[in-house]
Image (cartoon, rainbow, N blue to C red; front, side, top):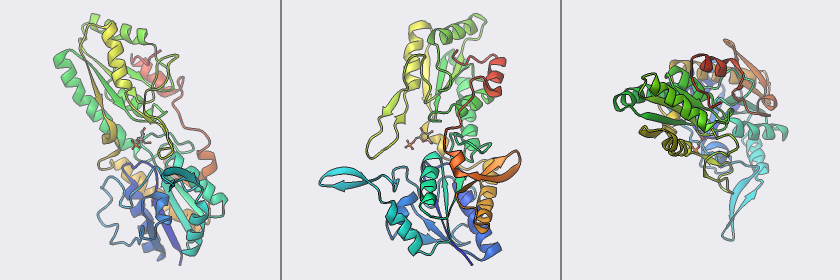
Length: 361
Ligand code: F6P
């Protein structure tokens, strides 16, 4: 009989609960193991009240629920942990405490469900001797070594549905509608939802855009009798020679910059070159919420089951992944070295251009 712990780290996404449920079910029903839930990411190892047993009862009914029953945090990196000292916030390495706690709890394994940031922490803990298994999550789909992360499909559905809704109002009012989507430095959400939602212009971080070209494309559409246009812009997109639009710079407490505002920037620029009304919709955290799609429920459940299998086979330092239709595993190290970005000359971007979509170049 083994004792394992599970935590969810970083930004939430639909399907986290399905993974937790998959882990608990296969660990308890098939193996009679004990599962402990660690609350609010790695923070749960630093505060004794933030841990609880996960039983079949505690995961009942959570499969269709968005978010995570364990809570999460994208500020609690134990290798660089914000601590108040004499009125100032300092970053301190408290990873030793986390490792001690894991040993003290008598854990046979820790399953970390997280994106790039949380899996990097998981890898560092593994290098310090913690038996870790990873599960890749993020709506951004920017993790390597897996065909797709869970949560991404649901975010795409949300974005595509929003585009369908924007289409009808754009057409009625003969407007340019700009929709800003998430994705951080990757353009996957913008590109795939843009294709699925019939966008006319898609702007992604991987292809710095040319403002004149965008104006020309929208003008040409008008001249052909299309009196409205739909622009999908990824939050990380930026003009040629220009930088990203940042809402909040990285700081001691929030170690990554917060992107946002490129939609408004575009609207201002379009007003200078077009004689059309423009409106901006920022989809924001709606993309992270809601019930996971069938695809994400199934993928997340299979990831949970595979994570338990990896623990049983003591394949620590590995992460579950999707390859084709198979769930396999890869070293976490291989997955977190660089981000999985859209290839500007790859099949997805080229298909968009074949469809007549302006990709900013
Ligand atoms: O990584 C997921 C994500 O939703 C990004 O797409 C976005 O840039 C970021 O997290 C937003 O983070 P926060 O929840 O801290 O605003």
